[in-house]
Amino acid sequence: MKNSSLSKKYLQIISKIEKIRSKNNKTWMNILKLSFKHAPKDAAKLMSEIYKYDSQISKLVKKLSK
Image (cartoon, rainbow, N blue to C red):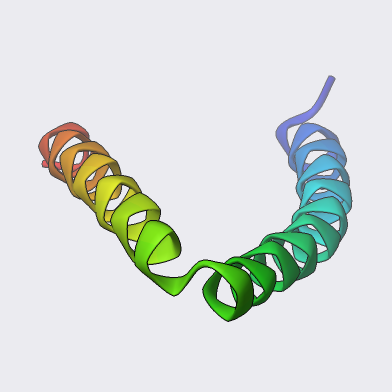
């Protein structure tokens, strides 16, 4: 398979992933809003943990991109 056709195939797959992630992100935001509405202190604790793990992931990605 030629590089250009292979690249096109990858871009099509990435586009599909992007569409799915967009829908999933909206769902996550709705869960987040609901959580802060009904249990703000608990939601804040969960967000803090999520942030901690996201920071760890970001540091690892930074190492990969060097």
